[in-house]
Image (cartoon, rainbow, N blue to C red; front, side, top):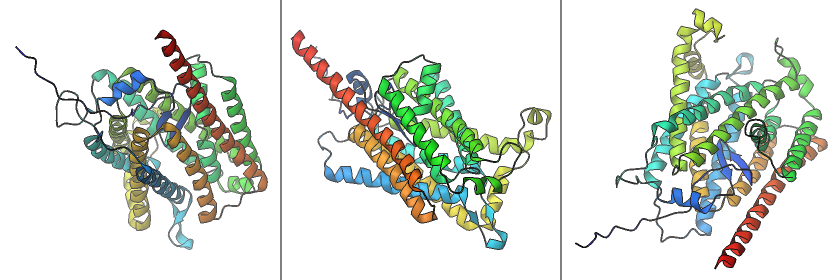
Length: 415
């Protein structure tokens, strides 16, 4: 009896998002690594099914880069406006202080965008006509839950830091994703890194320190925000350090998921982490008002108040913030889709380059749009930070090329 001929499986470049230390960057919660092995690529190729006949060209690259720039540059401006400026007339202005509500709206948009992307870019390996499963196995739930918890906890600390440091300092420090990831890998996984990575960390840390020390308004801003916890930029940097540690744990857990649960693609991760994050933050908003007055709430030091009701009341008084929150969430969600699509279509070096230049443009736009003043010494600090990040990307690319060349030479010798 003749065997039935199976249809060919269409394939695409890998969407694996890894972090094994060769080239480590993160784009707003999306972990990127330059070194993906052939086996890792093959594990993802059976998931997504774009048109294999069409080859990406300059037009496709411009659309991807333009989408990332447009989405995240607008996202950065809106983030600064929502978290650092006031709404309403000068005599009765108010500041929006509801980070959990903001995260919830953002994760809802990202989850919906991720679902659309999942249906458009993936297919189920065993059920034709259906997308890849968001939760392919029960074993993947604990690490995905950890990803969602860390992403949900990171933002409130970051927004709290903005009470003591300005947005430029915040953005500059947030560019240093390598620091917390290296710290966690060194302390938890006992992993060793090449010397140049330690030099990059030293350069970036020096740049942030120079920028902070020479800030012209650090003292005046600290005086405006007096609290028992602390009233200066050091406290703001401490809060931001906690934010970065959560970011590092978030990225490290993503690394574990993509390494352990193959094949698992970017659209699946985007859907899963945002669905779980929405469930977590929504539960917090709905339950805390009832739990806070109880003995359990007092033991956990839950805040007294109803953030959901207060946020909606704030939007009712100042409708403009509602439009800003919706636009902020939409830009972030669309930006994530462009990031994953760029990574799947082009090399991660392209994405890292776009990410670094995008962060620099965000700083320039912030200076122009909000009238920040940066001293020459602060520009030196900025140069050290982005010089270190760019150098780390270049060295990582060089390492990868050397590994590929050695591998090719070894294969030739075997033949």
